[in-house]
Image 1 (cartoon, rainbow, N blue to C red):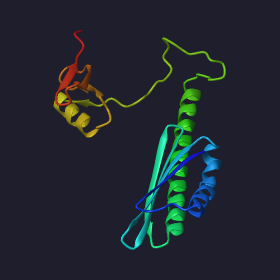
Image 2: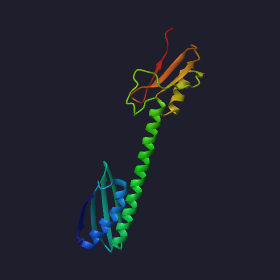
Image 3: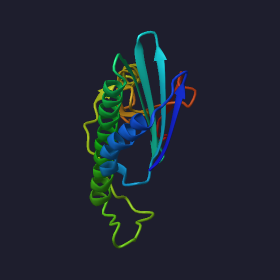
Amino acid sequence: MNIKITGKDFVATESIKDYIERKLERLVKYFGEEFDVLATIKTEGKEQVAELHVTANGETYRAVTAHRDLYASIDKDIDILEGQIRKTKTKNDKQNMTESIRMKDSGVSGIEGHEIENEIIKTIYYEIKPMAPEDAKLELQERTKNNFFVFINIDTQKVNVIYRLKDGKNYGLVEPEI
């Protein structure tokens, strides 16, 4: 744990430095001893402002609070930082869990180290409705996350695909010749 404490128009006493170090030990359970802290202490009017920047594992966390009591401001900063760290940790854990579920669903195992290539590993089934190309375009516009839409052209009775072009404004239509 690397701690740098600076005071702007304010002298950081030894007791304040010790208090900050003692409070920052609450963060050790999240990162171990591998994190950097920049603490800035200043006075604005009648309030004492404590600003803490914590950098660990490529992430930066920041908390700034003002209070009449500097120690209360530091306590509040630590609480804010802990909340940010927990939120990020939960988000990363969920993402890792989702990634591992995807790997499991696709049949890829991280333990074996084998990667499946050139195989169909996922199939999606959905209903194809007969409609005009203009109606299919409207349907695709409603589905903002999809880049294409498959339908049966009511004029030709053949399967068509309408897709968004890379310009994001226009559409393309795939129609079989036969």
